View 1: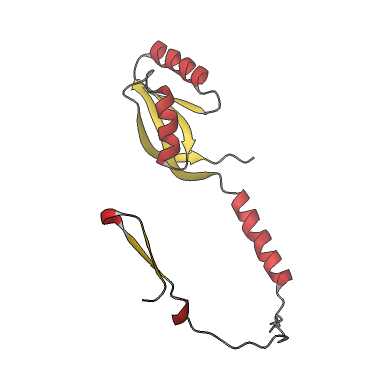
View 2: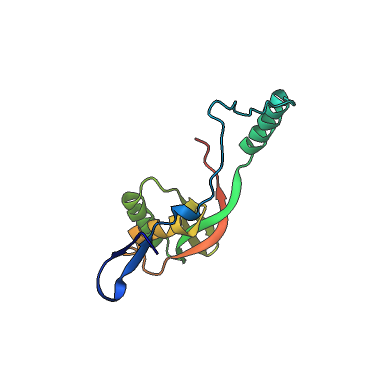
Length: 144
């Protein structure tokens, strides 16, 4: 092969060939006009109405399937309240949900769309609650 160059040394030697002679060549006119396709069907108003409909339907969605962190499930009221205070101090931007179903208190933390988001918060509070776990749950969608 006429114009070949070797790069490297030893076993990892690569061969670079000039392959331009094998590439196809096409004849083009110097001042050839560019082909332009104009759209013939304009549905911009219909698309806008459909997008408004989708947006209004999406505004009415309040819940989705996601994940929360189960921080506590037990009957000790003072323990759950202290734990709740510690979590709020550590991650103030995450919503907590405390429910009581006799005789148990249940503390859930966060509204996460995926496990990765939940795991990031769990890592921040894992020293407070080593037995906490991520559970699938219905979450609230915040409207910003």
